[in-house]
Image 1 (tube, rainbow, N blue to C red):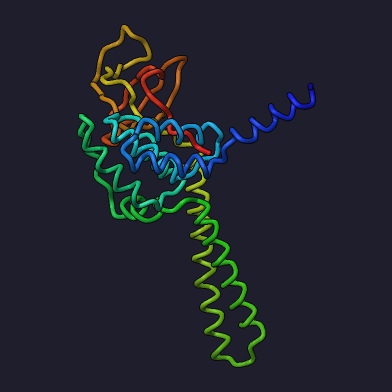
Image 2 (cartoon, helix red, strand yellow; image 1 turned 180 degrees about the vertical axis):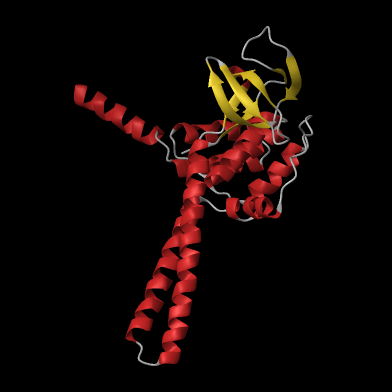
Length: 252
């Protein structure tokens, strides 16, 4: 009898166990039927399993957006882009979700290099830049070998020039890769989750208010004291808020 009972328990656990793929497909079907809360519950089961992806966070964000929850939708679009910066759908929907926020913060003016960095360099993950490094390493080595083996002076000059050009591009791509890696792991961002929060000029409740923020606004974290975070906005303003009012955009 004990063996039969154990078999039944094992059989039921196997039958009840669902792969992340099964859950994802069921959640997608529920979303298409406008059952956003049910779909969200299944998506978040996958998240608990740590079987995350850009597509998963994108779909979670879509559910929250349909449920008119601004801060969670923006947070999850940001998470989708954190995993895959080239996710165009997440970028477009994030822009739409930002229109639901109350805060209108203008970024500081950028010079040509800063625009190039934000629009091009930062659009690629550091793993992608590492792959670019490998490509330039291969091309540089290939043309240097051709230069070494060639006996024609004209071809040697051509091969050497191409090799040196790719070597310079290799150095640039290595620098960019390390910069992206350091920024990814050292710079923290968060989303305001409180409906409205007063930003203080010091990390205590008795300090003066400097400005107000509302849910869905993205901030940079630049310091931490006890239960307080010092934040910076894209317009350069800084202040202190309690950690309970934000949700940090986790990094993997």
